[in-house]
Image 1 (cartoon, rainbow, N blue to C red):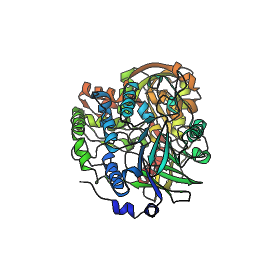
Image 2 (image 1 turned 60 degrees about the vertical axis):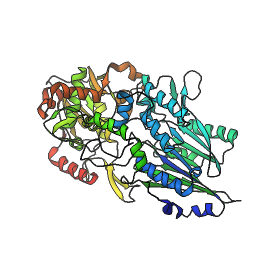
Image 3 (image 1 turned 45 degrees about the vertical axis):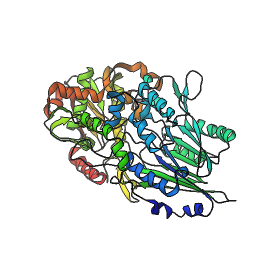
Image 4 (image 1 turned 30 degrees about the horizontal axis):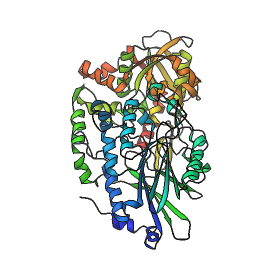
Length: 570
């Protein structure tokens, strides 16, 4: 049964304008859904979660209250990667219409931007999805993804709508930093333009041709610092510079956020269907437009029952796939332990990377922020906790000096000289709750450590001088002038996290020439490791002759500080 939220929406003060003969448009936005299509867990006993089924319950109630023709539903990208469901239908069950296409068609989405994680699925997946969406009248947008052939947009660029009595132009853009993260095969045939270079041009063109009442810029770009320094997060840069735009939709950084400047509203609805962005545009007769934006928390317990039943077979297929036994784990894995030093979780990833590639050294980071895999039988679902992304394993050649510089850069984003804190954390407002919370300053998926080496990280030393490498794992001499083979993710090898570019100082054009080998997806390599060994324990993944050893020092003083910092964060 559909929950009736009409009284809530009618109570909005702005709706009074519509009741007095004006015009009212509701724009609802999602982004970074990352495959969160179903509310139920795939494994019995785990918690339910927010999902597109929660979003649809909310949006459908809004439509009941104000009318379908007064609502515009948009998504800002990263739809096709990040969950068991998206993985299964991208690579396992690939027949027919992609369930994501069916779901957004059922929900009545009007337009979707292309995200970097959508591109990461590969041409075979996103080209299919783009075609199937287009057949249903839903544009998959990325005006700044320019075709190599003729400089035209590879994806859809914009679409006109008539909603709420307004003529509305929605212009969509993908993230311009994709080439810094993904290998060329994934984006072959495209170049990506900076949003600050091209969005205003597109706005001017569309305004001249279509003469819309309302312009929405739909971007897969983070909110960012607003100082022009972060290519992947240009939201606040655009807020400061755009003219002739009413709503700027951002995403990518997973942080709910709203801001307004001179009548232009920036809205970022967060991630994984936990929130939606909601902008209301009103206009009285003879008056100008008025806008108001907010981020609205979704309720995981309020889902659309009809939608749930419609897609029940799709959910059950994913569930059956992900509960398949993979092997046995003789210890628990806790991903948060990675922030304190060596742990079984990262040791497992390092071991798999070294043994699968034959490389001498491995770089790896905790890619799940706070997850646990319990001891006992391991199922395929646990593979997504251990390794949530579809990154391939690459091997690059780096000198010893470059390896040390890489690690210095990584740890500089992670730790600080001990004082009140030892981890690099900060307290900031939480748009989700209105309170303040502690968080890492940097992204934890960039907290790389190394295996194959014996080294320490001395927090009392200044940045750039903290990493002291004593030897290779087998005890042999580590030489800063010698070249070594280093295993890492495809994301990292293509420049992700700026470890290779900013950390070492390599030019982006140099990276491809350093690559020595490419291997399958790391999650699948971990899967095969479990199948090969059957039982995985701490000794198997913690062999010091293979992975080496590293510590934060002086351990007696910095570890208690780090543990206190983690208590603040978690």
